[in-house]
Length: 322
Ligand SMILES: Nc1ncnc2c1ncn2[C@@H]1O[C@H](COP(=O)(O)OP(=O)(O)O)[C@@H](O)[C@H]1O
Ligand SMILES: [Mg+2]
Figure 1 (cartoon, rainbow, N blue to C red):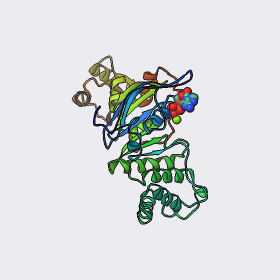
Figure 2 (figure 1 turned 90 degrees about the vertical axis):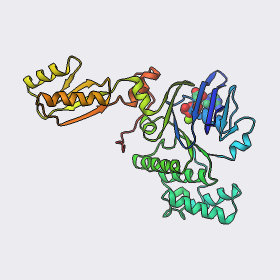
Figure 3 (figure 1 turned 120 degrees about the vertical axis):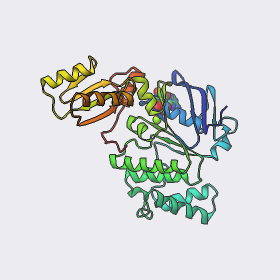
């Protein structure tokens, strides 16, 4: 098997008649983020439970942090962190006490675990709340505490099962920032999500699963490119009937005109963009705005899973922060 931080080959797992995983393979290079994207019931949690040694497989092989998940489970466990959809904090203790206890549980020693706890509280913006009981924490604060807890033992590989499901938009953004911070420290992350925008925002590679099968994978850009060609969209400051005719004659039949914007398939990407701008300038048509537009991941997902309605997939209405 490869030297990837996570590598799974042909995982399959059924529960009775339910084929939770049919055939899932993936590779996650060290220090990168992989998003396992799929709607409810796709098999995401099953995959995470297998890779974190909590569940056996019917067939397939897997390695995490250089060790075999099945025959070297202890070695894998010592090198991973996991946060699930349900938090495991003691509600009647403070955030700091919770982290401290987890540190001792991980055999860090009193001084080290207290120092780790304080560092992590600072890192995840929980200093002001550290002496408050966890039952008084907001949903977003709990998730960040959960994330901090999974980092106490400085895992090489972190599994986040739907880290932002149920969070409000502001807390989601705070979680995203926290996850990005992790990655800059070199931690490899596999996160599961039902949110296309989340995968797009955080992941270096995306593995789309549906009904226990990988239906697409690649970088966000590759996925978008594999589905539809990009378009050059030009916005013109003014477009009367005669100008419109001239634009059409220059750009050809494939030009689509909506209001003041003209869209042309960019078969050569940026080169097409330059050509279009040059042609419009040549005919003395001032260009107000120009850009290369890619199909959205939503379109990609609907196409690869063959569910045009996107049922069960949700993309909360938060604007992108690029
Ligand atoms: N322990 C279990 N017993 C029976 N069925 C299960 C069990 N765990 C998961 N499943 C089923 O396997 C499928 C995949 O579930 P899961 O991996 O939890 O999906 P996801 O996390 O993507 O929502 C679902 O149909 C689910 O009902
Ligand atoms: Mg799940």
